[in-house]
Each structure stands twice: as C-alpha cells, then as structure tokens.
Length: 148
Picture 1 (tube, rainbow, N blue to C red):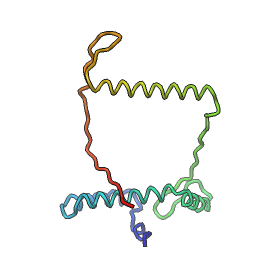
Picture 2: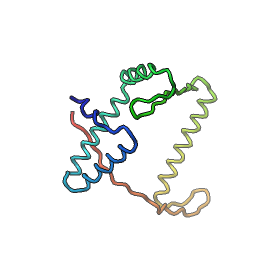
Picture 3: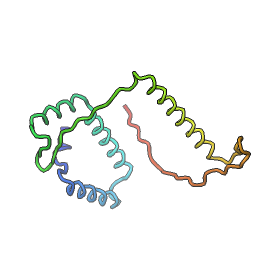
Picture 4: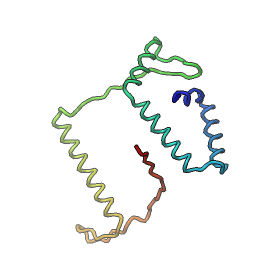
C-alpha cells in the first residue's frame, strides 16, 4: 500500500515544476489547512529521508544499477550516472589532529566573539567601545515532532 504513493511521481524536471506549481496553487487557494499540510509534508520528508538513507535499500539500488554496463544510462525519461566517492581517514596523523584542534579552537573563538557582538562592550585591549551588531535577521519556523 505504501508504495502506491510513489507510482505517479513526476519523471521529468518539467513535470516536477508543474507538480510544485499546481500544489502551491492548491495550498494557497485556502481550501486546505496549511498546518495539516505542513505536518503531511514533514512526514513525507521523514519517510523519504529514511528510505534514501537505508543501507539495505542503497545496496539494492546500486546492485540494480550495476546491471547496466554504461556509466550513464536511461531508465524511462530519467538519466542516471553511476559515480563513486572516496573519503580519507586522516585521524592517524598527529599533525592533522593538531590542525583540527586549532580549527576547533578558532571556531570556538569565533562563536565567543559573535556572542559578545550581540551587545555593546568595551574592548579590554584597546579600551574602544564596540557597538552591538545592528543587522539582525529573524526567521520564523515551526518545529514538528511526531508522537510514537
């Protein structure tokens, strides 16, 4: 039953654009409760995230793609390109670990400075008055938590 959700999904960029615009128009029509819709979208997002992140599914999809000998191939109207990515574990190198520690310290120093800049203060080294940052951006958002 759950897979029926995915059978009529768009297969081209034009179809995706059209689906987004049509859905947006319906949402903004006032015929739907926007909070109910936000909950549904969040749930779908979570389902997709879990499915795409599942190692068994990833392996199954890669195995299927390996049946195609070409690096780039088409399935329906979709072009798929097989790729790989290397990642290196540098943690065995002492100098690298020292540099990472310095980097972490610098990030911490920046965060401390950012916190100080939220209010005016007197620079202890120069005695100069440092004015609080006046450019503040505010973004409203909702946090959605699903019950068990």
